[in-house]
Length: 549
Image (cartoon, rainbow, N blue to C red; front, top):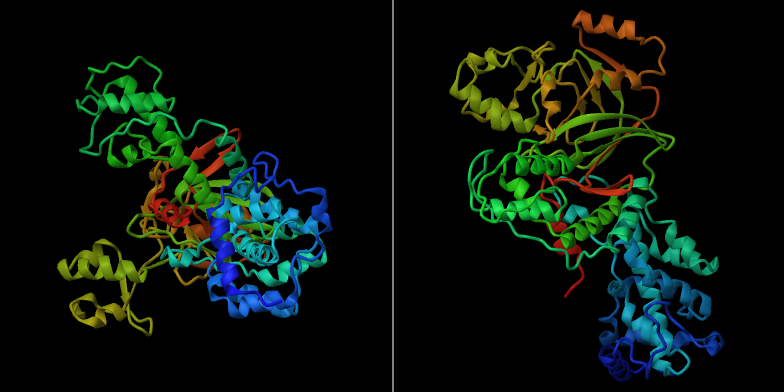
């Protein structure tokens, strides 16, 4: 029997216009899942190879409702267009995954949810055309589900310039063949999901968050405006106080006539700033107001956003790795699943963002010189030297040519393009911005971990202070840990190297990966921690991630 395009279009229109839970046509129970009749198991052939091939070849109207016609065709070509969803258990298992997909932060409607719901519920009474459609949609849904769970719904490299982590390799067709041959949909789909503790924590946080009144929670809006300092008066103080009370930070009585930024409001604000990794200064600026204005629904979206990001990250982070969460200003060392060290960090500013990527530590350098990165050379050093003849001397910078020979700065025409060809380097020493040690994992961004002479800045809560590299509190201790498997580099030996002032490079022997990641929400013990989106990456992602209206 040929699969008529006309009949197919009529069928699609009928399905799209049908009520989701019409008791006349569906036995679907939204609480308990698809309730197929006992005779559904007797439906051993949804369709035949001829109808599948006809549909894929001759029905352009039909292909419009398929997410990936090319991939679906590839799958069926490899299976000689034979139907594969004849077993009731397989159909139910796939739909159960689609039905529960919001637990992963994805959306039921993105996987033909409502169409499958109706077709599965009426499978015994469906027409041949409807069951052929069911066969095709089940395949299309699995393929998309596998890709989205393995790689994410979106491609981060199409969204962010700072994203360098490669996409996971997902062969959705091979996964579907495996799922069918092993008759195990659940295990196959679970094999491509992230299994990191943060991802699992986010899933649990999402589950708990959905139990709250997130749709109707009060959310007093605070208008942006000038900075409000302690003791100052501002008409927005009432809405600020009310919002802090709604969020549980302000416990006192609210005076609607008060316009003064008094001590009790300041203390509540400091607690809010501390919890969200904002600068704890009791100053009411627009960054703090932006975070105060997030509604509970916004926070739900933030959980979904971060689940999506975790699907972008490598599945195998290594047995021993350093993970830097950029907006949380924290570095952790993980070995065999346990966090063995943690360090505060400083990361790139909004203008010079720290990129997201993964690499492997190769060596440690004590008493490092600092070679000026291209961006700083172009934007800071050359303009500074052209304006002030003493600039390089004050910054303790040397100029070297392509052969590594010192160049007299007074001989350079700073307005010429040749100025960019020189290397600018600061010798090792107490004023060197890299401090006394740097940890190198060669990468295209010229990013590394390093010490800093500006250690007092680690006392700040918000620490987006660098030009892109990651400054590490107690970087010397971290470097010593990375070399701890090499007995010759004892504390005494390292101290001798440091006192010598000589630049010394030591290669690592143990394998330690480094991952620069970016997440703005996670579960911390029994609470959900939301932190400041320092690079404003969340909103753009949500606008692309959310389901179409």
